[in-house]
Amino acid sequence: MFEKLGEGPHYRDPEDDVVFGDIFEAEFLRDIFVREDTTVMGGGLLPGHLARKVGSWMNAELGHEDIDLFSPAFQPKQETRFALAHASFLPDAQAHQAILVSDSCVTATALAQGREGRRVAGRLLFAPLMSVSEEVWQGLVETEDFERFPLPDDERLSAGSVAEFGNCFMVDARDINEHVNRRVASLSQSLAVELEMHWGAYSTRRGPRAYERNTLKLAWLFSGGGRPTAEAEKAADAIARALDLAFQLEGSDLEDVSAAEESVRLAGGNASELTPSLTKRLVDRLHELAQLANTAAEGLAPYGKP
Amino acid sequence: MATAPGFLTNHELDLFLGGGTAGQRQRLRLRKDQLLPEPAELGRVRQFNIALFPRFALAGLVRELASISQASETMGVLTARVLRCAAFEEVSMAVRESAGSLGVWSFDALIQGVLERAEDAVREWDEVVQRAEVELAERLRISFSTELGVIERVANDVCVVSLDSGGVERVPSIRVAAVAEIGRAVALERVNVLAKEIGYVMPVEIMPDEQDRELAAWFAKMAEPDTTPVLAEERSHYEPLPYRRSKPRDALWHGASTMTRRPMAG
Image 1 (tube, rainbow over the protein chains, first blue to last red):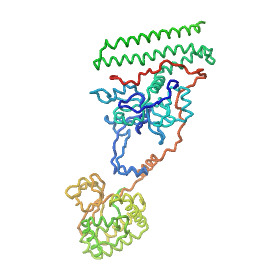
Image 2 (image 1 turned 120 degrees about the vertical axis):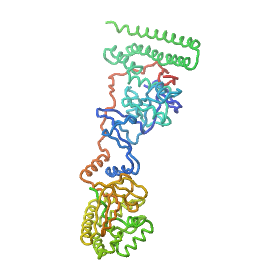
Image 3 (image 1 turned 60 degrees about the horizontal axis):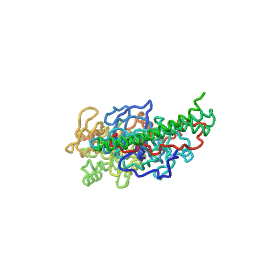
Image 4 (image 1 turned 90 degrees about the vertical axis):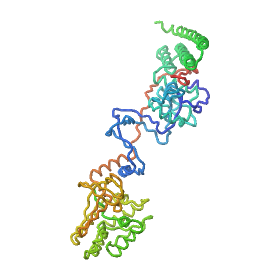
C-alpha cells in the first residue's frame, strides 16, 4: 500500500469544517464496547463532604470535590443514559487520539456545518489510534491488513500510529462540536483516499484494496495454485484496471454530478449550463471503461478454455 | 454504634460559655473556682492551643454544681483518674495528629480524625469516661445522658434536633458543638445537676461495626492498583496469503474519493 501516496506532506492543519480523516486528541475518546453484561445504570454526583467518607474507605484522598457515583442498582435516567460497558484502556503515556471515519457528508449533517436551521445531533464514528513498534508498523504497510490502517509518521501523532478499525466507537456529535479545536491534524487528499480505500475494504470488502487482493487470488488460480506468474498477474490485473476506472467514475465523476445538482437545487445554478460538460466526461469515461473491460475479457478468455 | 465523644476541648467549652474571648475568660474563671477540673494540656498544635476535658466536665458549666459539697474535689479526682489511663495516652496522641491536619477548627473533623487513628483506644476510653459518669451520679446526684438524633432545622439561633427516641429538642446555637447542618447525625448530651438540666449538641462518634469493616475492606480492594498482567490480545483477524504480487500494481484510481469532499447536503 501507499504506492500512490507520494512524498507528502501527508497531513495538513485542520480547517473550519470537520471532515473524514480528521484526527482528534481528547481524554474522553475511548473505544467503548458492549458485552453481555452491559447494562444501563443510574446515579449522579455525590456531594464532596460524603465523598471524603467514601474516600476514607478506599484509602484515597478524594478532597472536597463532588464525585460521580453510578450503579446499575440506581434508576436509569433518560437525560443521561449512562451504561456500564467496557473499554480498551490505553496506556497512560499514550495520547488519546482517534480518527474520524464517518464520511464528510454525514459529518457535515451531524455537526450542522453549512446548514442553517439544523441542530447538531447524531453520532460520529471514530477509530482509535494505537501506537505500535516500527517493525509492526512496517509489517502492516506491506501486508494490507484491512482491520488496521498504519498512518505515516508525523510529529503531531504518536510514533507508529495505527487506526484500529476493529475498535471503532461512536461519539455524540454534540461533544465533537464542542471539541473541534481538539483536532491535531487533517489528512492530505492522497492519504484520505488511502484511508477511504482501507476503510471500505474493512467495512464492506469493496473498493481497490479488496479487489486487488481478489485479482491476486485469481492470478494464483491461473498459475495452477503456485506462485502467480507475470502473465497470470497481468490477465487478472486487467480486471482491476477496469474496476479502477469504475471506482473513479463512482468516486469522482458522479460525485461531481452530485455537487452540480446541489449547486442547482440549493444555490440557484443553471442545470443546462452544467449538464453538457458533465455528460461529456461521463461518456468519455464509460467508453474508456468499456475498452478496459473488453481488454480484460480478452485477457481472461484463454483461461476459460477447459 | 454511635455515641457522643468522651472528651471535649477548651474550644467547645469556650463556645458553650458565650464564645470568643468572653467565653475564654469565663472558662478560666470556672477553672480558678475549680468548677472545671484540670484538663490535659496538649499545648499548641499548629495554630490551635488545645486542652482536653473529659465529657463530664460539662457539669461544671451548670451553676448549681457550686452548691454541691465536694463536687469540685470529686470531679478533680475522677478527671485525674480518667486522664491517667493508658487508653487516654493514645487518644490524646490521635487528637494531636488530627488537630494538626485541620485548617480551621472543627470538632466534627477532629473527632473523625481521632477515630480514624485510634478507634480501639477511643472505644476503651469512652467506657472509662462512662464509668466515671456513673460514679459521679452516685456520689454527687448529678446525671448524664446521651440521646442520638438528627438536626431538623436551624433558625433564629436555635438548632432543632429530631431525636431517634421520638420528640424534638430545641437547643440554642451557642450550645451546638457539631456542624449545624440539616440532616446531620448528632448526639444530645444532657447534664442534670440538682434538677437543673442543660443539653449540648455534640458530633457523634460513629464506631464502625463488622459490616462497616467489610465495606471498608471492599472499597480498599476496589481501590488497589491493577496488577493483572496485560493479556496478549489477538488484535486482528488478518490471514496472510502464502504468495505475493511480483510488483506493486499500477492503479488507475488516483484522486477518486467520495469521503473528503464538503457537500452542501448529505
